[in-house]
Amino acid sequence: MQSQPTIHNNNIGKPLYEQNAGTIYEIPNYEIERDEDNPRFLFDDIPTRLLLHCANGTLDLQAIAKQQLANRGLDENGKWVGFKLK
Image (cartoon, rainbow, N blue to C red; front, side):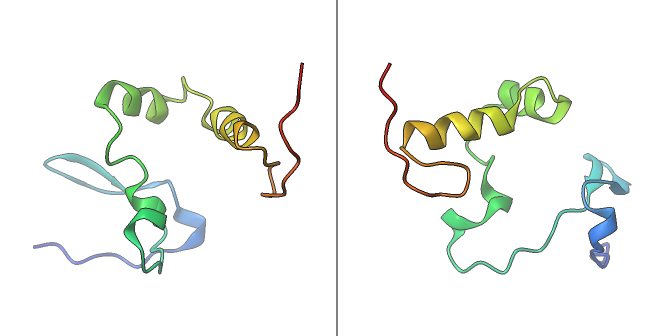
């Protein structure tokens, strides 16, 4: 069994090492109590075809997140701005 390497902020998102299943990438170790709030589990229920688009950058995840916030009446800082009427 391979030991977990230390996570360094300047390596986040860069390949750490290769294993049978593919490349392992370094991501932060989030100290969050609730699993539903932990970004490590964000993509657990995402279909593989969408996850592939996310990994390859063919989906603009920031634009999707901003639209979802706007749909909830929030700005990018989580401040209530209300729903805009056309």
